[in-house]
Length: 408
Image (cartoon, rainbow, N blue to C red; front, side, top):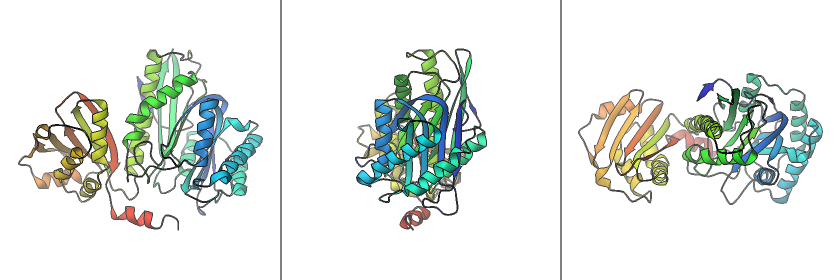
């Protein structure tokens, strides 16, 4: 079993982080972070499925696929280095070269991540100055990880961190992570940068399988606005400093590690959904008793991405018809005369629909439930025993305001 703990990307042994204000786009806050392991790590990653992929995505994907090892990650906020062609790739190479020289590593041990405005060139001089400043102030303390998590934000209103510990082979193993994501968030990864570290000793191929296993039910189950980004990146580094017996096959230790990793990813996913641009509440959709895992995921995502439903949640309006409609156009074939619908929050639970028809419920009580900061819609399909949960947020006027002048 795992245990949630305080901390983030520096919680695991042998990882240090730094941050700085490089003034890449923002002028009054930190906008760069650097993460480094004291020893070589097995490296895994998942990336955007958008056909248009940012230069750092292409850089990282190649290193993960061809080498499967890394030591450091250089991250910037403000400019995405996306849709920048050959120049963007050259900037990646020059950034990695400079970081490697500064840190005493080699270029292929450096991973890169960028987030922000699309179509602008990164100012290489400021990137290099930022790397130089961070390299002299790398720390393993929890505060260092927290400040790094703040430095990678764009329209986020708060940093996202999570960490767990578990025991493998009698050794304490830690998994910690940080993420950013607020807008352009949609399944098939989202506008997110996510960096997860662990001191677990594990084969790279199994590390990749563990990450690929948990992403479909965590990061791919969140949506803010239906837009899948060009820069989505989730990197997982494991340096083996826990000195557990190396996981080299799918055994009970692998399963325990994967469950703990899922807990970290689920926490970060929920935090991103709750901090969606302009959001006033986290909107969770639980689908129960579907015929298959795939159908359960599809149904949950259809509801959580419905603009009409999201607007109703913002207005505290128990408009169950919008939920039924979203289930109906999901592409999943089901019997509508079996569906039960509920709303739930810290302020109570109420059933609105039984066997496809509205029941006599209190609108006042439903409104009270919907005014909580976290609201759950429960859809019981009554056609199987599979379930899935999706996370999103309400759709507010502020979302339009934020994105109307994002480049300003």
